[in-house]
Image 1 (tube, rainbow, N blue to C red):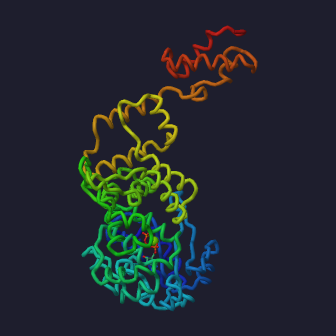
Image 2: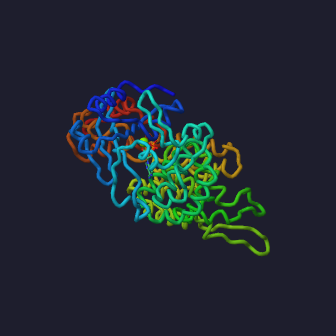
Image 3: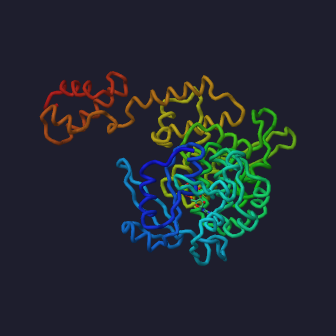
Length: 449
Ligand code: ATP
Ligand code: MG
């Protein structure tokens, strides 16, 4: 187990010198035991929120969660230490938050209300308090509910997502009884807000094992509730004459996610849903047995928009998700003109090109194809090449101010005319779009031309 850093032991001492008990708990202990870096420190104490605020007047109390956040500055970085008072499990009327929070003065009671054994270990730098044998489960690489799993998921349905999220992050299995209880209680996920579902779902997508996470969401029946458009895709076959596909649509999407080389969560999400329109556009020709998905990207774009709204994405995230789905069928044909390649760049946006290509790489590998082809490589080269040429006058490395300054002329039509001439010369490849070359070129124009 990694030792506690000094800034944490100093923090514990502040409580201990006032006679309070305090422990590191939750994810931080998990990371310490696995000898991984800790970025997020959770503590549990017998001090009540009022008492904590007396010690740290700059703390802020979130009474919905019974947590006091205490701002910390460590090596010029800002952190928030989350400190919760020992509490016992009480009545969860709404499957999400207990009706009232009951404080406790017993650490074991507090650990008993935590969700999984590997997150119910307390540590104060000297002693490890592990009444539910979380360390054994860490070794066995198992997610196990604390207490009766059926009851625990019944109390708080967010735990359903948290179990899958932890399994995806850690590469663990979910213990059998816990797994059965997740499937049994899956419909309760309806009681959880979409913001919280998204938060856990995005952690699954961003984790080390996103594909396994999504497959577990499916086998546990959770996917039906959170992403039904994807769930139905597992029943859509696409193996047909003249087609390279080996997987059903759902498996293909999960495999695409698995191979998507981007770390960006929206790109991963788009990769996971890029073909969802296929479920609604599936047609099988009775004579040729040929399967088609005509216009699936159009239908899929509409579904992506609905999904983005359901998951309460920000406008920026929504636009990006929809855009990546909309253009995922882009052609890499060597026969398309430079103009067409430029249009593609304009539509997708320069900032999204890398993400669009990451989706395509995932898509290729996720259909059992090779990661690349000469055609795809050529297309990527052309994307770079055509971007070197300016698309419009404003893309030139000089502007009207440069013309006025270099020639000593006043604003007027002459300035625009010179820029336009230079622009044409760049398009015709007579001169490069290079600032110093363009400035020298301007000097050749007469001042009153
Ligand atoms: P992370 O690495 O994301 O911080 P974490 O396990 O620390 O993971 P937090 O959301 O920070 O997760 O919660 C801190 C601790 O609080 C958890 O480890 C767990 O012990 C407890 N906890 C959080 N949410 C719940 C819940 N819904 N039900 C029971 N216990 C919970
Ligand atoms: Mg935490």
